[in-house]
Image (cartoon, rainbow, N blue to C red):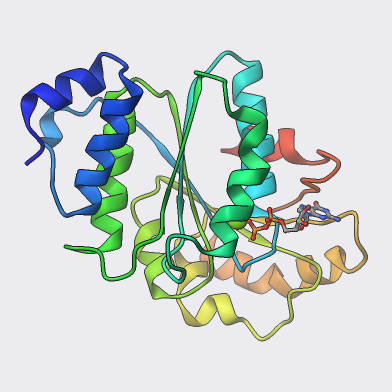
Length: 228
Ligand SMILES: Nc1nc2c(ncn2[C@@H]2O[C@H](COP(=O)(O)OP(=O)(O)O)[C@@H](O)[C@H]2O)c(=O)[nH]1
Ligand SMILES: [Mg+2]
């Protein structure tokens, strides 16, 4: 259990205390759930390279324009801590460094004590305790551990691209069953309409909506945020 003194510092807005508490969560420490204010978590998942981080960056910008603070947790179950994907995310997210209204943290340890999903859930609880208003969790890939992490999100967005084939890799892991929204990103490229058609029956079966986005041009991002 993370001690009350550190929790108090997190609550007071001390970002270093928040970082320390999240590291303890990674090591399997928990917090008293009754202390955590009510919050919603937006989950963003999908295959590597689909544009998740670029999309998260655009979503963060929309929230910041409204004056809302944002916490982002980037979870990469497949890479060591120095993994390329997370490193790329850091670079992309640099736009927001120095903005005290944005807190970004990555988590990449395989074989987490007590599991990656519980550690991620505690990290997000801690961000809520720290007063961050909008919470986003991004995972890389489409495997079972991504589904586990996405189960802690209140709204799940699967990011696909026109390059995505119709061998429903995502479906095998069961992600389509928990998804609320599919963003066909890179819609500035050819083939987005084909992906929408390929998803039509799954969308009906599982009850998710499909939106077209281009994180590169910003097209469709406002609509996506509106549906969140
Ligand atoms: N053309 C185009 N490229 C994009 C778009 N969104 C992201 N990208 C590019 O796709 C690559 C992978 O993006 P990234 O956000 O790192 O993907 P992630 O692995 O899913 O987080 C980067 O080079 C982005 O600049 C988009 O809407 N259109
Ligand atoms: Mg990424």
